[in-house]
Length: 186
Image 1 (spheres, rainbow, N blue to C red):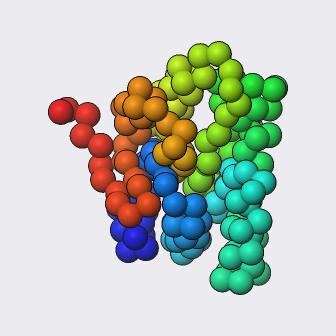
Image 2: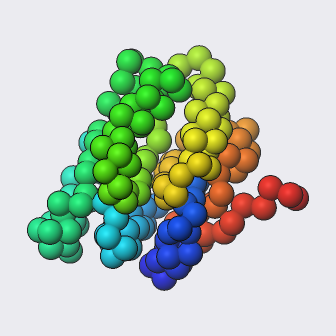
């Protein structure tokens, strides 16, 4: 999987990409995150990781053991609960505003940045529709940038109806072991 991720990052570095990652294996998920941020740093890009309190310590342990201090300075983390439930629930406008504010210092200073976001949510009314609307709008915003972003979803929490929406609002579909470009013409 390492070569697939590195090849993808290299091939979309000038155009950007919005990648839907449906994961089943948390260990492979962490491995793939480490490969992604290593590839990004190899291109001179900073990486914003939006992750939960349970997985983030595993990632940070790997970062400390596998990357130099200089490389570690290029990694920025935020708790995904704070990010996605900033106002107590999953709200598209709040999240997009938070994302814009978070990325602004990088973009305004021409500092290349990539993101990795583990998307999670609380139980709330119309949550899958809200997530779908968020991803569609995020995709429209990303089309005008060269940002490479991976949106990680636990496959066990994604019903087919949401998966269909996510497939329609991303450029690539990634699993623990594969990456493929999404063909919207079929």
